[in-house]
Length: 417
Image (cartoon, rainbow, N blue to C red):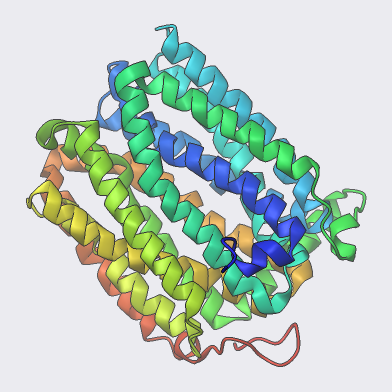
């Protein structure tokens, strides 16, 4: 009988522990992805308030991600992730209590999401840098694909669970589940024992050393054309395209599609497409992974015009499933390329720059999406987003270093510049 678990989970016990905790956490995150916008609307918030709360969770990326990257390369990465999970458990739990007791207001949600985002800013660089310490280098693509598979599956299960919880217990009930998943993730991280010297290296913090390490991380970024050009394209994607998903999509669904249930169908369809994309990237071994990733980014950048197309919910859901395939391909191949071609000792710092210029700048788009759509209309705003994002993705595909980057290079620290 063929084993049910993928070989990587059977062979690598430490990755299996990490995978289990992150899988539960991802499910909670996907629930909150649907629940938070409707939590804001349930307390009388506007489209601007939806964007404001989302921006509050992401603004700390701009402020603290670089600090998180330096610390993750300096201290034990899994301990930073554990502390982050505990903070996020507390913030989501507090938000759930406020909503369930009927005393929540928009400022409460803004403050709690800002604390949540600060913890996130320390978690994400540490997470990217931790994976090479629990998975052999030749199996990083498999590991990233499995993580992506869980994230995509969460987009299918999460909205269904969120829709049921929002209907039965309100957005507060959905956020209570999210809080519990962070507690489960923290329990898994508490027993993790990453291998390698970097997992146990700790040096005393120092102001001058911090700036030196920060500059060294930036040197790793700017010395690789495929890295900084990829970051630039992702910045456009996060600032221009994703506000259509986080802000304008839920608003349009609330006004015209019948509310959270219809939006959950679209999000779930995107998740199905992402599952397909992760299965493909798990099995395929492209010789030029960043060329495939850049082409996928072009497709992913059409999400705004799809949401604003005026089609039926079913048609929009099918098209969003196609973009889900593309998004999964891009992010798995991008993260694997970073983990393969960037030195392990600098990986979290490079990842921190990645998160800062992409997710860290996203609050700008989230805050502007509401007022711009009020002035121009929701659909014209969505079309304009696409007119900016698709050419930016095409520009990434035109970069020679992106198209030529191989799957692997001789030498751990080699890179195509």
